[in-house]
Image (cartoon, rainbow, N blue to C red; front, top):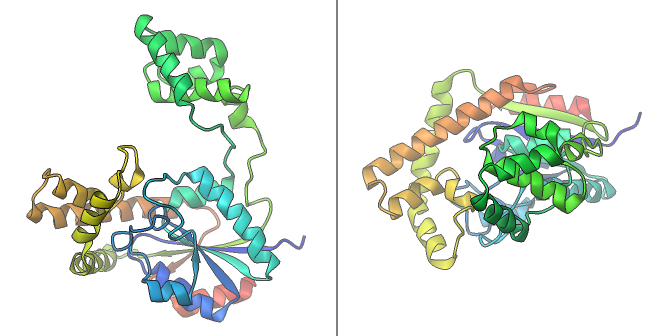
Amino acid sequence: LNQKKVVFLLGPTASGKTDLAIKLSKSFDFEIISVDSVMVYKDANIGSAKPPKNVLEKYPHFLVNNKNLTEIYSVAEFCNDSYKLIEEIHSRNKIPFFVGGSMMYFKSLLDGINDMPARDDFYREKLLEESLKKPGYLFNLLLETDPEYAKKIKPNDEKRILRALEVANSSGKTMTENLNESFKKSLKNKYDILQIGIYEEDRTILHKRIKDRLEAMFNEGLIEEVEDVKKNYCIESSHPILSALNYKQVFDYLDNHINKDELFNKALFASRQLAKRQITWIRSWEDLNLFKINSDEEIKENIKNFL
């Protein structure tokens, strides 16, 4: 089976993915696609460790600076953009090279994601109005429409209940049917994928890198960047930037929830926690070729053999 090739490079925060990606793209016919839920936003530069402008001009990254901070970028959108990019890049006889640390994005790309209908605020309002009059209304309605899904969630899980009712109402198919639909666009079945993970058993190495990078971010003007974002955009409370690493902590500081001394330590702690979660993903990831940080030559060999 002569499947077209795709390469993934994933790793924890501050493990040097971007630099490595640029190095590798000099040796291979790669076009880089960023797998990062924050770099996709314009004006979220320092806190997302986005490559500087001159680097992006020389080594273009897809899905960087694609969205305004007034918009919200979803996993589904990322997957749809990626499917298109893969085809375009293959049509130029190049290889799509996905690089980043947003594990959920990688996972959704690999396993496929359902084309669920969009949020319907008008229908939600109606449901919530009814539920104020009749306690238990939402869950009972779900039991009628989709008993199988209702079994899987708690009767007070309003968020999931609303979503399931909205999906059934908009698509004419229950949440269960939507989830079972195997038109999941899994990349696994379509392409020959090489998955590379960079990883460090020795935590102190990664912790030092995280700390050095965070210090550099503050020196480059992270606080000023977030001040500008606050000034220039009306950001809605559900926007992911508000809970994104480094941004959340600076927003908290600017809103006087934490003081200047706490700011660095909170951001450092959050970075370490994120790295820990990313490493947990990486450890349980199937078909992943694991390399230590700074194993550039071995990784190059690995890619050569794959291609």
